[in-house]
Amino acid sequence: ETGVTQSPTHLIKTRGQQVTLRCSSQSGHNTVSWYQQALGQGPQFIFQYYREEENGRGNFPPRFSGLQFPNYSSELNVNALELDDSALYLCASNPGGQGTDTQYFGPGTRLTVL
Amino acid sequence: GQSLEQPSEVTAVEGAIVQINCTYQTSGFYGLSWYQQHDGGAPTFLSYNALDGLEETGRFSSFLSRSDSYGYLLLQELQMKDSASYFCAVRPLTGGGNKLTFGTGTQLKVEL
Picture 1 (cartoon, each protein chain N blue to C red):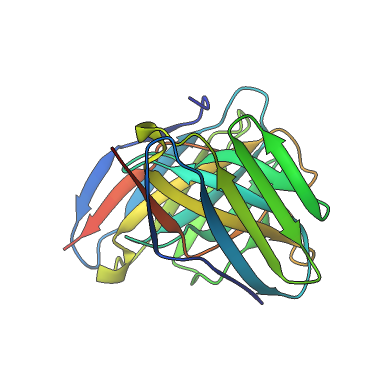
Picture 2 (cartoon, one colour; picture 1 turned 30 degrees about the vertical axis):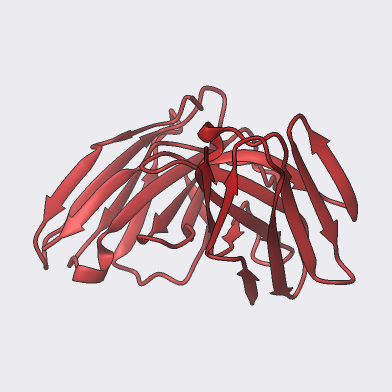
């Protein structure tokens, strides 16, 4: 157990809808990253937040957005859902803004878009 | 860009030793990490190589050769609970932050 929690566990939406996923970082961690993991593939980096600012983004369109709150919890918002957005969404935290290869992942939210 | 290739599936028997390879094409990275992910679970950090050579952590060892663009994870004394997916990953020198680029993943099946 990493101490990183995510909600909800599972979610079903229809195409065109919007979704918000939530993540609580491990205590003392001020950096959170979000990843998308399609079935049978490795996680793909979406973006990262450090002290409430986005400081890194992967190849995802602007309809993927996020927030980080003063308590370092985070949200991932996806607008205009598409079928290909069906995936496991993982958040990961680590203790500092400095680069580190050790990410502490939450259990993920399984999103299904119909 | 970064590209990390792994065998899709490896099968071994309990008690055996298995090696999971990772070959990469990358413009530069800090080190090579390995993560384990059980079905429906979170990826968990296993091992990290910043420098070339072998790192040993209990039953798990990891190796990196930058000159060969190659690394591997070695699992000894396999147990049924080791059945999971294993991912290599790098943190690129450019792009900032803690972005990890993951490999294609290897599903390990441990049989009796």
